Length: 299
Image (cartoon, rainbow, N blue to C red; front, side, top):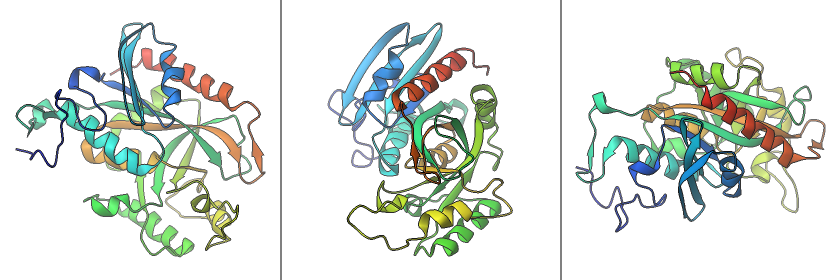
């Protein structure tokens, strides 16, 4: 049995941070960072069953046609993903009354799609394009706290990047094509078949950790150039873009047994110093594409 101090429930039986109960969650889950983006997605639902909010975690569950979908916000950063994924998984794979993990035969595998924004690191990846992350590379230390096993290929990439950036810790790498992650590859084929494929770095901040200088000097002035020029024989196409959550989504979904793809609306091109002139319209277009394709998703 999982102790009350380890899996905290609210007085109404809902899970601590998300304030959700199992019936609030659909098998198809769209995750967004910005809480305001939840309504941008659910405005296209044909009907909405549940609307719940606690802190930055906003949840709407409803239907597009006959497909039941949950859209939920994580807030910014991999630390919030730690909360979101642990609690979503608990809702579907732990009996909250007995506090027992359900047997493997009853394991529920969520299908998750991140709709997020990102900055391109390569000149040839234009603003206002859509990119699916074929791998996520975390520059945060979150996975130092978990028994996360990388494949030899992923470990090689992570060690190589640590050396190039001079980091005091080893990043982590999670590839859709490693570890027989067939469900996620199927999601990519069905949802993102016409999008650019890339390798996404997740940074633990927006300013210094993404090479921005406002009033504080950064430790590695060559940070952006190093990412842009990074080469590894196992990382086809190099590093294409960066944002702040993808690597954690990929790591947790692999560890917990869920399927996941991260879709990125490219709003900035750091190589060309360009930014989208109509970012809201680009994000809205990606939302409508995902909802149209998730409705026809095949098992």
